[in-house]
Amino acid sequence: MSDSLSIDPAATLWSTGERAGMPLLVLLHGYGADERDLFGLVPYLPDGIAIAALAAPLSPPWPMPGRSWYPIDDLTSRDSAAITTAAESVLSWLEAEAKGAASIALLGFSQGAAVSLQALRLAPERIDSVVALSGYAAPGELPNDVLLRETRPNVFWGRGSHDDVIPAALIEHTAQWLPDHSDLSGRVYQGLTHSISEDELADVRTFVTKWRDEERTAD
Image 1 (cartoon, one colour):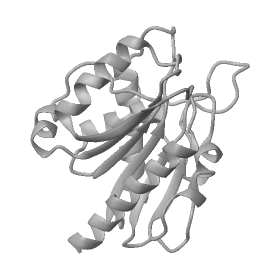
Image 2 (cartoon, rainbow, N blue to C red; image 1 turned 60 degrees about the vertical axis):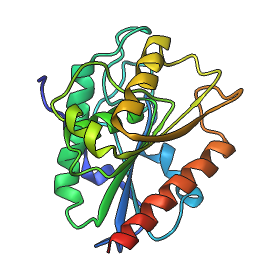
Image 3 (tube, rainbow, N blue to C red; image 1 turned 180 degrees about the vertical axis):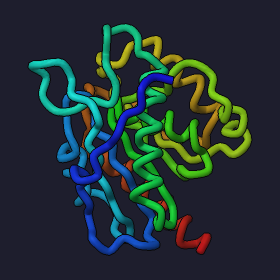
Image 4 (cartoon, rainbow, N blue to C red; image 1 turned 45 degrees about the vertical axis):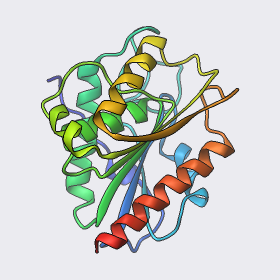
C-alpha cells in the first residue's frame, strides 16, 4: 500500500446540521473539481437524508485547478493501488465523521466513482449502496470481492454513449465486473459526454430514494 492520504474534514460541505441517525449520502467529485462541484446536486436529491460533499486529498499538476483523488499518469490506464489508497481515505473520513449515520451510500463522478466502488470493495459492511457516474471499477482482485458476489449490494452505473474520457478497456472491464458483484441498475445515456444529464439526475434521484426508503423500512 502507498502512503496514506487524509481528507480535510473542515472542507466538507454538509446539506444539514441535523444529521444524527439519518441516512448519509457522500459525494465524491471528479478530477480537477472540488467539493463544491457535486454539492450542486443537492436540490435534485430526495429529502430525508444527510449529504456530505468531500474535498479530494490531492492537488492535480499545475495548471489544472481543483482537487484529485489519485494521479492520472496517462490516458489509457489507471493505478489500482492509488485508487485503493484514495478509497482508504474515504473510509477513514467515514470512521471519524459518520459514526452516527443510519446507513451510508456513496455517489461519485469519474474519479469519484472509481473511488466509491473501491471503498465498497474494501468495506462492504460499511457501504450500503453506490452511485457511479461516468466512472469504472478498478481492475484487479480484492479480498472482499468474493463476499460481494454473495451479498450483491445495490449499485447504479450511469455513463454517456459519447464519453471518451474513460478508456474503453476500463468500461469493458466494468461492464463485466459490476453485474457479477452487485445488484446493478443503470443506463447508457445516448449523446451524453463526460457529464451528467437531467435524465441521469432523475434516475439517480429514483435510486437514492429507494435506498432511503429501504433504510426506513429496515428500521
